[in-house]
Length: 555
Image (cartoon, rainbow, N blue to C red; front, side, top):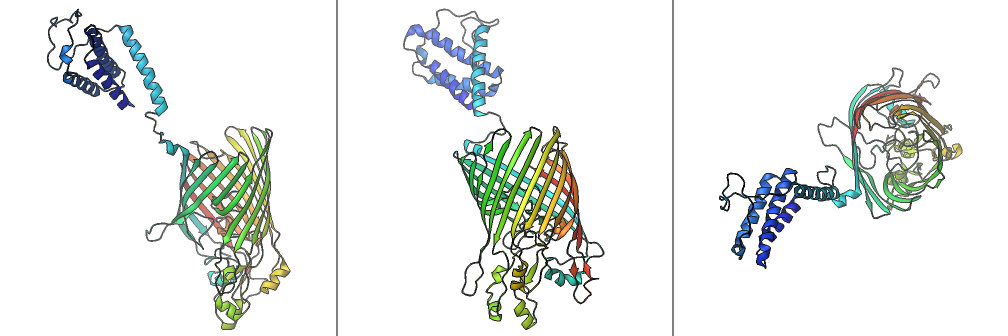
């Protein structure tokens, strides 16, 4: 930096000003001093020093020389160079004037070139003037974030069940209080985080996101709906993990992880879901074209603290995924994976007696958060029937062991345009009709399959200015095909038991900043039987159309 040159030049000038040990060295010292002054002027010409700073350095050198004990002992030079025109030879310069003797152009150029090389080398090493330069400890960090503003319009067709039948909707797994009235919303999603390398094998990540915080909030969405009388929005951790990677193909991670699984669509996992737990990932490669990826995970879903009156077990997810990736050429990439999401104790358990219900023995087996679709039953049914109350506590009727087959094909038709085909298929292997009847007293038809396909054309991301994407997809998810709490929250306003299509497009009018729209047309698969009406004529499908307009920027 320039401060170092100031110190170096001042030190050199002071050294020149010091008294010599021998009289025959006086002339040489004077020449060195004059050369130093000339060097200062050369640095000014090259833009390394300002004229004000150069004058300050020269003045400091003169003051230091004047204070030296033997400064006056320096004898005059044997011969004085010819004075410039208008200056009397041998005359003392006026106060404040510094006379610089002639220095050959070759010497000046040699000094200038050497200083320039030294300065440029130091500037490159220390990254002078680089706006991205950080202290050494910050070079281990990678920061990221994004912000999205969304306008949303939810519309319900005229043949929907009326709002007055919401209790019947709830009893059939439709978790809503509105089935007819149009809704217009403004939502904001903000996320900010970083990853940092610690040594050679440890990586940590920490991230904040807007949206609901705590048990009962929407686990699949980081949206914050505006309209809370200007109160501040909530923010929580959606990343907080430590990863250990002793080998390039092995990685162990624990904490709040995001979504660690390969998933081409949102059939099983919503985009904003962040799983919590432990995972091990093995990702070896086999030659230039083939690679394998596998993930094994243990995720706590709900912790039920033991109490004298509670017998509710903890809920867990054991997950396994194995897949391959085949990069045939630089333009063609194909992936295929199979996964099993094995939920433990996810189903509800009815309170067997009035006393058990009053004490809340199995209340902890209820689903604290759900969207729509899954078959549910009232854990407190016995108590409500006896007392004529409506203290409903809904638990999932089925067990869930979800088999998932996923595939994607990415073909670059020309840089940077891609055509991508994505597909997911699921089946709930945990559904047992007889077991559900024994536990709930209800006969439930098996609806355990689902699939989703989508085609996307355009740029792979919105990083470049004027990037664009357009997509079209179809989704079919039966009632108990997967746990509705974790799947997409936009199609049919979240959950399962819905079918329909969706489409959308995005355009980056600036680097990393895009506008876009999404349109969902979804209809319930099973239909709802309204209480007190003929079953054949009253199975009304609960339909929802959703339009979303987004402005998104990332950094």
